[in-house]
Image (cartoon, rainbow, N blue to C red; front, side):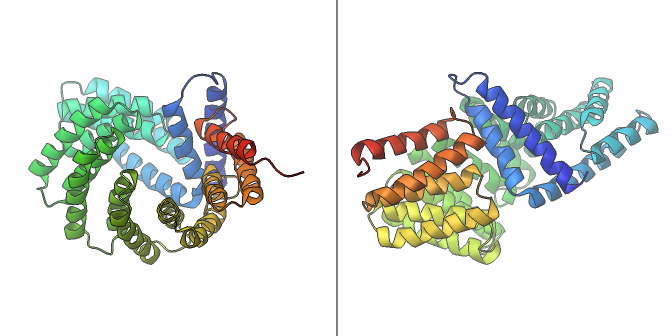
Length: 370
């Protein structure tokens, strides 16, 4: 499969998901919206995601060689050839056969279930991925299986199951790798993120700090994951309006990302936007504006002018223009954001509706002068 073919397949999946969503415009689609966002992120960063796809394919082929030796060489080779073309159906059938044949071999069956989960996750079929990862974890309760099941439960907003699974993941990480391992840190970060999503901020903060310290000790303060940990903690503090404590963390995360990933990476744009939002919230508009403009420039080049992420930054910058009473300019940015989101997410998407409401509020409160 070539890069062009990968991009075409990803776009086709986005189009199919948008059509499915449009068929029921009045119903909430939080999971579908998240799946669309994931696919759009892959398309926006197609070279990087294509490399990950090739690595995934190579890993799956190696697993087919190991696990499929009782299925016949022809079946394995056909499945591998299909994988090279981006078709996972043959591999899926082969792993399902392995799972059925090895039902009495618990670990082999768990490995087959996990492989099926990885295929489903790669194809953004989160419900199926959760079912397969959960089955793998039920058969063999280890960190790798538990944490993937937990992440899928979180993606599906099944927070009660996610909380139970993340606690089991932490227990497994402690037993398999120790409390000073990066695996234990991943579990801590996932738990904190889950607690934040559930609105349990007071519980989330000390766990974020514990995860951050784990990353500092295992990977160091110059690693991009440490920047992510700082950003996560700062985001929690921002949600609690603890601006003075959040600001230095956002700035440190921004600098680490600049040094490790570079100023053209889309994550750098996200860090710029986050800091700009904080500065706007505390009325430091003059400092926020150049950061918003940098974030827009980053997204324009890294994501493209038709990407919903670019539209989000347009919306955020427009809110700053409203705050500084530049209403005519704000209207232009809001309209551009609506146009992009209408096309990329659909007219009924919650994010599209938010920007439309922002535009309507602006026009109602500050109608253009004729």
